[in-house]
Image (cartoon, rainbow, N blue to C red):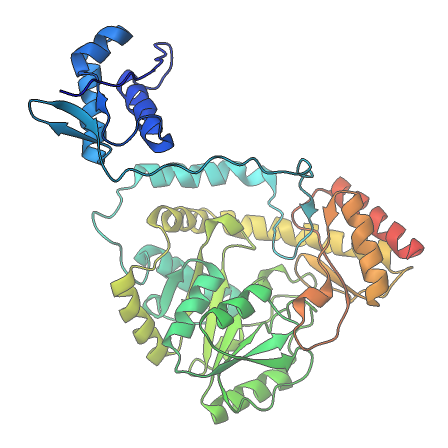
Length: 447
């Protein structure tokens, strides 16, 4: 019989990790690093237990676990051996270079401001989730029925979009809904505003489709060669204007003639400063418009929750696919958002944020107007500041030096040649915004 190999182990009785797990982990590491070579005979469970001062049940548990994983094999009448086929773990290589810089506060276009006075309602919603009974199997592929009922009421009241709850599909955010739409469209290119929402463009490319660039501020009169057109009519992302009535009719006519579907991303329409939100484009034409809504701008991007109202033929195709893939937002998130809608939380945080955004938009434009000409915002949580690229880069660098990441307008362009800055003011405090503006102004005056 082969001589057993010494197995140097150390156990910590004060640790929270069970003793059997400690023993198994150290033997496993020895196998992976080659310290316990293939074919080596290990001490018996009795002998190892005696060496470590442990119960034999502990070492038996460790051996049984490693045998089940395939690292050890028991040979009746002979003992326990390191199994053939184990792998040697590559040596650890420390990352060379300087320590990472502290993270920058990103003043982006999508991080919302949430009034802390409403936290009690947020906590109450999640208590409701904990008290509710989860579905015993996969949930309705269209999404939680009660949530769709609430969303139908919300869309009719705030967006002028009247639809039945059965026409709504709950999604994992705007991009989740867009991906499902794209999967249901026939092969072909998708038109996209330029400049435009970068995540949407990336989602389109990921399907292997080509993108037809649409100048963002010009009316769309021809969609020949496109099967879909992604637009942000309530608040063009990132330039900011509202699509005028005549341009809306022109777009719908072009879609009808081309047999294309208009994909309306209604990402922050609820944050109009001066008047009531402009009705959704889908309210004018349900046959040619697929509507995408999101909770990201009103509640939290991390909820990953949205909703889709698609033309009837696409709705059925998407729903049939979801019945197979179960590509639906998580039930606890849907249930929490249902509580937030019923409790009035969503309306409350929207009203609070609208007032805050209006004040901050004025704050940003007042600070920057002596140095550049911002596009005056009418809604949302960012200001777009066109300027030559040299000046934009100088202000961008000055903001970074002060701890802030300010997006460049050029990063949102594909064929367009627009330059400048996009200054988000949702995900920061008033003090942080003032410091960021001071740094931007410093860069502009020196650039």
